[in-house]
Length: 450
Figure (cartoon, rainbow, N blue to C red):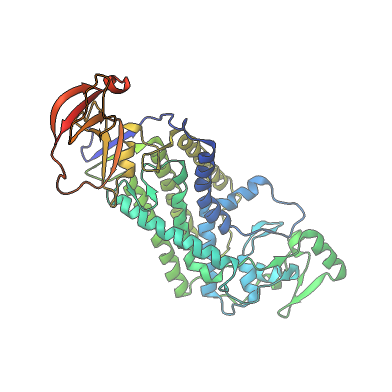
């Protein structure tokens, strides 16, 4: 089958390039690598409230940290706020809480009432406060998300490097695109809090000994209903929420998917652009594939449950085999990317990190709008370029530099900076001298005058 001329791909083979990275540099690299992961994944998952004797197993907890679970939580919180008739601090706390019950993870609307007997602390207000922890998290994550949008947009415009982003990234940048989740967080930014507390099982047991029932908004709910799964019908219903057919809720559910579709387009364009040759390292290709899979799955999963009208703040498919498998796939891909990136990462002449090989890496990584000229100096490909110097003034053959003369040494490396519009000096070759005559090297050098 003939190859489609509109699409051209080049993936550089994996190469071990990180041997010269020092221990302190590795610490800095790993800090830059893990910071977005910690900021945007950990910040999106609240501390669970355990209302059941058996604690969740590790595989029951790991899916909470799936980025798709976090995206769904943001959507569900915003949608619940839109549909709530009376948004008070009790609803505020229960909506943000993550309950572990006999039914597993539960973020349903019924938990607003059913969890009340276990609540020991409620937020002072029914919305976020200016100097709260969630405000600081939202501010930091939003700034990082804005930076990611600008950087990725510039990179898609054809520039291999831009403010804060390197297309052929090293290990420091592999989780950088997760910052985009910070912008989705803005949908529910005013209704996020961690200023609440619910009793553990042991505390609940002591409360149960004192009283087995509690009155909540004129409805009595058994305090052990969450322990044995026998919630009463009267306690599980609440008329404070409008149905999902409420038109503002419908509008929001459509609007929520628009930025996700935009991110999906960015992922596709990063991998495939008709009429343009696409070049990757193994690291950059795996990173692009990882985010394409994650965004595609998030659109399908969240879109499906939003269309069905699910209202739980916990993604409905959590605990299912296929969702656990999907979570395992993302974790496995992330670990593979991390290992490959650690192997391919190297330092460039301008101080940035890249996974590109030495032959093209410095130019592709260091050239940007502020420093557009990066000249690779290799005697084989650019023999007429060198470094000029007046030292030493006399060579081994006792030949002395005259007035206005200098030596030009061959140099293998990179020259970074801005090239002037016009030449400053005009030099002419006078005599060829071997560099070995000066410093014992076999490379060529030239004695010039101007």
